Image 1 (cartoon, rainbow, N blue to C red):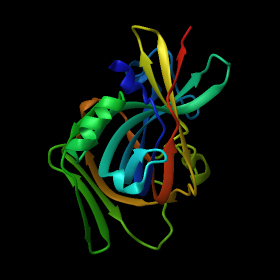
Image 2: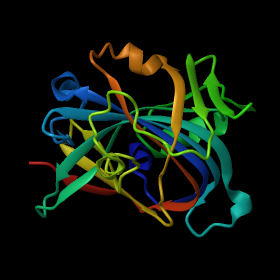
Image 3: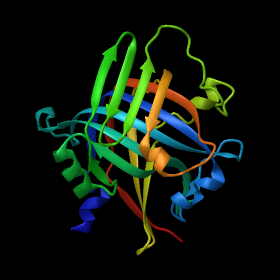
Length: 244
């Protein structure tokens, strides 16, 4: 039954909202978090990046199935920006999943049947209060407060980026997601296809993310923060290739 985890069919969904915070970390500190087949996707050969994505997902279902058969859920995903060189010699840019959390038990079950993304259950609360959007979870010890304003948004303090042009290159999600089977030395490649992808910078008032803290990294800085809304999205059937 392990073959089911290899994304055996295409899947589609609709993202009502995807909020992504990307943290810059000195690359030496995260090299051990990725498998040997991948390399870090870095900025200025100094910074590696961990993204925390909060995605309100609707109608997740096998591609081509009617919407009423889909599942609605909230996802928190923790990913590292990476690169992979395929057997055809192509340099692919994508993400390596560290952990996934969802507020629906059904999604936890299905996610762990059909993917390698390590879904675990959590609670999610989303509130609006006096110009603030608050996303929080007691179980995950997670809180994010977004300042909702029409004013121009600046990059976070201490961001390694000097402008939004470079920051958008690390907005995520990227086209590919990679999973490595060390026993078989194979790489599972899943390609995502999206439309109308226009990340809008958002202003972060405060954040507390226990999973990031648990990694015990030093000199972690918030590099950028974006929100993307109303996006149709689908993932192609997984492709497996031998590494080495």
